Amino acid sequence: MNIQEFLKDKLETNQTVLTEFESKELLKQIGIPIPNHRLSSSKEETISAAKDIGFPLVLKLIAEDIVHKSDTGAVILNIKTETEVVKAFDELMQIPSQKEKMISVQKMADEPITELIIGMTTDAQFGPALMFGIGGILVELLEDVSFRIAPITEYDAKEMIHEIKGFPILDGYRGKPKADLNAIVETLLKISELVTKHEEINEMDLNPVFIYDKGLICVDARIILRKPDTEE
Ligand code: ADP
Ligand code: MG
Image 1: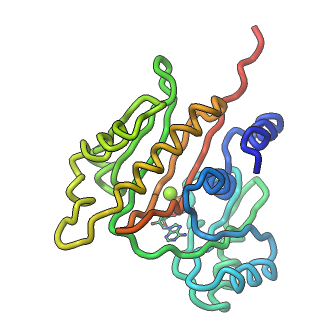
Image 2 (image 1 turned 180 degrees about the vertical axis):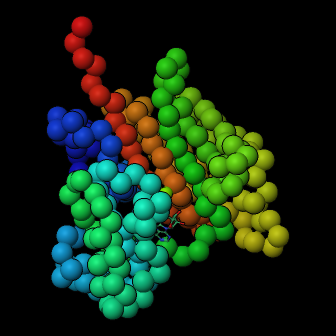
């Protein structure tokens, strides 16, 4: 994937919201780990993708007009047999959508120490800003997140991680292993570099990223592009 050309193609066809599959392919390209995944559109393709990737699996309905997948039942976790694959396929295909429906067959990632949210928004004044937080209620209810204007340094990334109130959760809370902070730093730096280089990217939402004592993996992502400036 040539990122520059990929983004140009998307804008030329007026697609500003990249699907989960496209967003994660782009992340893979810059070295951020994602679960092995494949898109399929028929039952047969879905079964053969399942066999190639191996259980346990997650099946998701991917369509341009489905944004919050779990709200509409478009995410089915912990699929362990071929029979369950067929059942999940049938269920997902019944979810209404005006757009082309595809199934993402993806490896189910191991249970993390905690879920993280890593994002990027564009500030009207300062341009791209990176965001970091711990997933779940810490972000939803308590808005426990940190921000930095891109591009960031390694030092900035470390500060972003340490300054959230939920930091103890990453630091061996209640006998859990310590999270791989270095993997988070590297991920923040990669995203900083990506958005600095590609101004077409207006928003990124890696939600969630699963963090472990060694490494991390991004299980859901959304990238939104900026419509090119119309001529005045
Ligand atoms: P939504 O569009 O609703 O945000 P997600 O793709 O984030 O849907 O899936 C919902 C939840 O399912 C995630 O927050 C995560 O906990 C879990 N999940 C999704 N994909 C995977 C995966 N590949 N492996 C393990 N868990 C996953
Ligand atoms: Mg999500």
